[in-house]
Length: 208
Image (tube, rainbow, N blue to C red):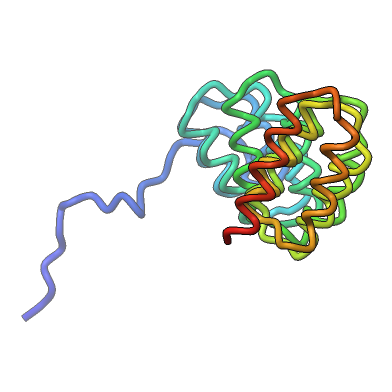
């Protein structure tokens, strides 16, 4: 008996009318000028083109559709390249918390390609960038996390950056990091909050 052909549409076979050529330039044009569904499909197709990472990152800065933004973050995370990291890092300077948090979430899953950028980020002139970088360290599974945190504790002069680093060190630190916390407390002897936070971190490390 022959197989009966189903009339039920297969969503995996649906083709969105793109209206743009399917090469990289055409897909980037679709990403910038198509409707939300066309943009989402363009993102999907561009995922296999690492040279499109900059275009995907630029679109994140202007994209208003939540589903397309999600697809853009997923695409850059899937690329897992230095170009993808370069496209995501500018979002740490965004005033949009959704973009910053999305970037941090994706970057935290790319420790090998993010690692070489951390030291420079921790020296950035923008205090907020340094704070968000410390937040990233709280999620980053990299063997140098505590080393970078110590760099902040012992050298950064901005109290809010140091406070963020103490918070992360409380969760990730080991007994050998207690001296750095004590030195931080000494450096900020006039700031009662830093002293309190450092003492709490030391106690947590000792209890772990």
